[in-house]
Image (cartoon, rainbow, N blue to C red):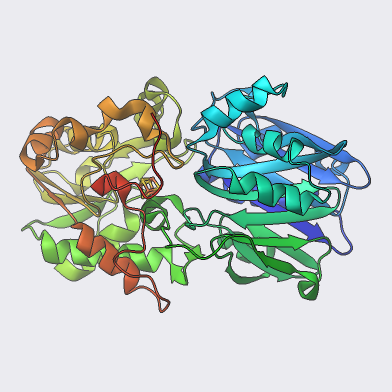
Length: 460
Ligand code: SF4
């Protein structure tokens, strides 16, 4: 997860657009937010919490001066959720500061960190990201771009990155293309962001995804001044399948596929694989909305919004602690009893990781008088922890499908559903592949959380 953004403008201060981008990407991480701009010197504002809280206050954005800048919304994976670990983080290159923001996980960071510490580097954070800053510091290269390249060649893991070095913004994706990074341009600005929807929000044109292993650099807002440099020889692509399923905003595009359309298609295929006789389809809001639309349409059943989601609470999945997740879930979800009393209902969600949400949903519906509650999930059982950018490796024993060894009947009993059905992995991939026209194939995904096949080896 995490949202990253980098903007350079020809003629205006970029703080406001960076703020809008951080705000528009906070669905990817809401633990902390920071913006760094440059106008001959760096200006930095950040804090714990979402951008609307961190940057609240008359005139705060006016102090972030400059026509170049980067921003970050954090969802912690490596390193605790605290003020020391807020990104972008600062590094030093040949006596000049630079800033770095990261989405992903560097799986080999621990050994590199120990090596850099032995050479005298003082780490200020406990994030994996800072090893990149340390490697840039020790690179011995004359240009920042060469130093970044050398640092990236020494690490293993998943990353989409943006850097700010003086007035220049650079962005790069790891050679497997695991995390999204898009490029947009227009109205005198060049932009890199995690979500293509930010281009719509800012009224500029989405140009394309940044391909795996490619570095993009710009120091003004002119499209023709963009530099594209291939850092790594092309490798097999492994975009995170969960981005299509859940992480990306429904209105964002990745690999020429609009997430809302792909997710509706997942729901339709789910119905063809896991049909059930019922009176209505109910989405688990908001993550199950699109799949429920596809399911209901294919099943020719009414789509009923019988679950109310209170939007004052964000995504519960990305709460760092289970206690917080439970509490925000109680505030977040409620049922409209008149809509479900005496009915057989099918509840559709995009995925089931810990089982926390679906248990709450089933209890709400049964307490409200639903006769039967059938559950349909628009992805396979989540069986293996992710080491590439979401925090499920810290909570292996909380993964409901892993605990039951993928036994659907045992999972059904634990959650208390009348019946339970999952979308097959082949069905999930089909929905994505058929949702666009480029060359994604069955083998071109990271699907390790469903299959246990990790495309980047995981160290102990
Ligand atoms: Fe995405 Fe799952 Fe791969 Fe992690 S393991 S990168 S969540 S597909």
